[in-house]
Length: 371
Ligand code: ADP
Image: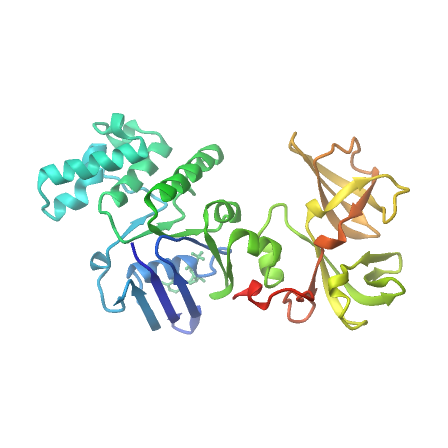
């Protein structure tokens, strides 16, 4: 096991800056997920840690060793890719032990390593099968087994679940997480799927355009996003954003959206100057259905409802502004109908309209927003 320390890493292709000033320490035994939209640079960062890409500048240490000039095979890492790339003519056991065979390790040692990995992954009964006799999930487990037998310091996963259907992805997610809980190795895992990032990671690194937007635990990112990008990327269904202007009134302040709509602002934002252009952020689950005569009730004109059985995602407009509401209570309404909703002001957030940074509340610790 080992810590990975990345210092001022940059990667350029001709004039295109793919990674910009990346500084990141991944602790020994930590499960870190790199997440961001397609093209943000996450695979390049992972491949640079693996040594499959060369950095334009900056340093990578694994443990205490500077890796810049070290070949991938000498970095003591194992990588699991999206495509399992198993050898079709070899059994599961040989596929898993092949890297040790290449290293000319004794047969008894290879068998022991393969059996141990097979046991961890529930593959013992399948060791004599060939890849074509396995399901997609089993093949992915063999690919992980191949990585485990080498007992590397660090595991690198590059979108390993993207080829699996939704149900299997959910299952494999649980397997990978429990595998990490048992083995406690350092894992760097790339995905574009924020649900995968939230459910797997000890800490998440959100990237956009080659820049780290925020590093934090899943709930830190969810509850205290550094900026509008992180707030919109993390969380499904996504946060609602409505542009407006801060306004003061007798009881405190609000955000004026239009002539009919003044949204309530948490008192911890009370220090802000009136007139400031802001974006109001509220997650769909911070709105709930209520009666029309309750204090603060807002009319939501429904455009579309997505029922899941467990819940409803109600899309509509409040005073002309698009808003989605996540409701555990079935509305009984449909498109064209109207429901009334109440907003939990203690869960709203404000973003500066120009910089798109989240505005800090009074009493909030500055280190909640490490970037
Ligand atoms: P992600 O994994 O986040 O989808 P990548 O790390 O694969 O993104 O790519 C980041 C950016 O670098 C993309 O804009 C991509 O087009 C560019 N890129 C990747 N490889 C090369 C290359 N060999 N030459 C030029 N540009 C590249």
